[in-house]
Amino acid sequence: MIILFSDFGLEGPYIGQVKAVLHLKAPETVVIDLFADAPVYNPKASAYLLGAYAKGFPQGSIFLSIVDPGVGSARRALVIRIADQWYVGPDNGLAEFLMRWQKGAIEAWEILWKPENCSASFHGRDVFSPVAARLAVGDTPDLDKHEQDFRRIDSNTIRRPDWPDDLAKIIYFDRFGNAMTGIRAEVMKEGQTLRIDDYMFPVAQTFTDVDSGDMFCYANANGLMEIAVNKGRAKDIQGLTIGKGISIN
Image (cartoon, rainbow, N blue to C red; front, top):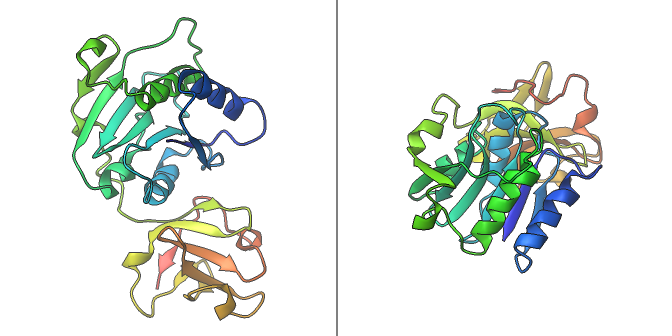
């Protein structure tokens, strides 16, 4: 399957054009919409989401990942094999936590191929989608015939070792107004809480453990700490924005 992860949004033509390419070039492949509203222009915040939500997808999955504010620049286009899964997308750190949290050997290639009349601003449609479709039908970059299309590179050159394992910031708001953080639930110790400015968010297991209107935090279903308001919207709390810093107390 091909898993779509992007900041394109559902409005406008972009996701539809990407899916049209995938259907034309790999018509038998299942395409899954994971995120169309990843943090806009923010590969770092998006990388934590992608790493967390990639867990549980089967071997052979292809993550077509496009949060690409540097599109058209000198940034490289990549294919990465992490154990038995694939990443297709820009070289801007977006795949860092796929590589860090998914166990297995890592191989990487720079995509040299471009179609005729490739746009400068929509590599998601013109470069990354065709390459993801090629992977889906078994046309992988390790085949000898692809020396002109792909160049094997040292995977260490695409890593972001300075990015912390846990990002103590808000990285995403879901449609319910809950605020996902880049903090893995597994690093929280018993008795600790999250704090933003003067707001304290005690840990609860789920929504019904607190009263209606109460603020709290919990380990979400994909292993990230999430800030919520029972029957309310954390997004509406003054000062809570993407990138807002969080302390663990």
